[in-house]
Image (cartoon, rainbow over the protein chains, first blue to last red):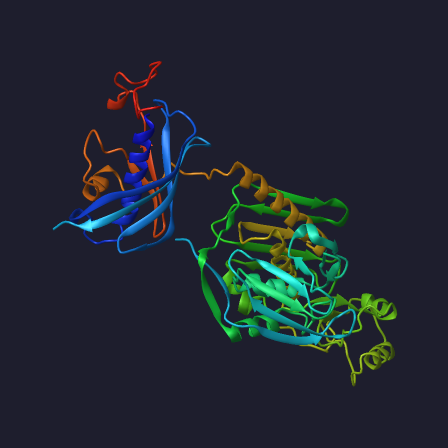
Amino acid sequence: MPGVLLIEAMAQTGGILVLNTVPDPENYWTYFMKINEARFKQKVMPGDTVIFDLKLISPIRRGICHMKGEAIVGDKVVMEAEMMAQIVKKS
Amino acid sequence: MSQKQKTIKKPITVSGVGLHTGAKVNLTFKPAPENHWYKFVRTDIEGSPVIDVDAFNVVDTSRGTTLQQNGARISTTEHALAALVGLQLDNIIIEVDGPEVPIMDGSASHFVEALLSVGFEEQDADREVYVLNEVLSYEEPSRNVEMLAVPSPEYRITVMVDYNSPVLGTQHAQLHKMEEFQKDFGPCRTFCFLHELESLVKHDLIKGGDLNNAIVVVDREISQEKLDELAKLFNKPRVEVKEKGILNNVQLHFQNEPARHKLLDIIGDFALVGMPFQGHILAARPGHAANVEFAKVIKEVIKRDRNQKVRTYDLTATPIYDINKITKMLPHRIPFLLIDKIMELEADRVVGVKNVTMNEWFFQGHFLKPSNAGCFIN
């Protein structure tokens, strides 16, 4: 699976974390703001189940969410990254 | 939901005598920073050496648990440590100005009261709990000691004691969750047998013992003269043996107080694992030596798991959010919705799952070609 799409999948998982803090997630846009320390360690092949485990690095403030995540297949970390996203109310 | 680490709001001092040395000692619990766990500091020694609460620092388990590090020793650590674990504190500095933690009344209740009196403070860091997910065992056949740790959703302890003594018989104690500690186990005092007591006194080993800080079990015939002699030794007006074979120096708080005290010892000694622990401990005839050895076994397992690093996930559990709920939250749609289900969701953590198949659009024309274009590097 392409590395950028692993990043996208991780970001979507992180989106769930931050959107879960508002009662009406359908009324918000989620913007990807920053990515750091991204590492691709292993190929992801058809048949793999990828687990995205993300933790907050600092508490969510003003809709800004800073996370560190690992993508795991079996017992191996296949990708890791620190990412930042912000949710903004649709106008 | 993960819990935050806790310490105390301000320092608090407890004073008493050391059981074996008889000398007055002051013990001060002090707040400590995040991820500190418990550490003893010997303030009476130059340079105030620090002694980590670690099973591998144990040097003696004959009468209480003695730790040694950086050239300093601290004895009878288990009751103070049990109070800290029992109140689910994470980070504490324990300053002591002597070689021994004061015995107080032989239980953890004085420490518990002192800690409660200053109040607790939540810290920013999450509490990291080691969740046991295998069965561990420890055995000392020569002493009929057997300990077992099995996975459990709570930190639970079951203790069985049997001392071949007609007075104590077989006793059993159970802690289902740590919240029970303060009331049901904290006040349980240490105990000893009268026949041991005599030899200990003769060897000058329990200078701080004054018949108020231990339950004395009398399981052999003893004359009143002998008892009078003993009373004199401890400066007591008169002691008698009560029906149940317990010296009338103290009232039992619980019928199975000795077994409960052994449970308290386990809680204290398991602080030596170095982090909060979740599992069910089953112990038959436990003692400090076995507790410490078993704590070492658990510590090694934790170390092994740390090296493996990757956590375990239960992918067969019911998802927190399925694909329908995800599409309600995220604007992404096929082919750009890259997450199938959410398995764990807390205020600060999320776990999502994506199953990758050969049918994915991005494998068309890209997959396993010798030259992958641009950003699609994998």
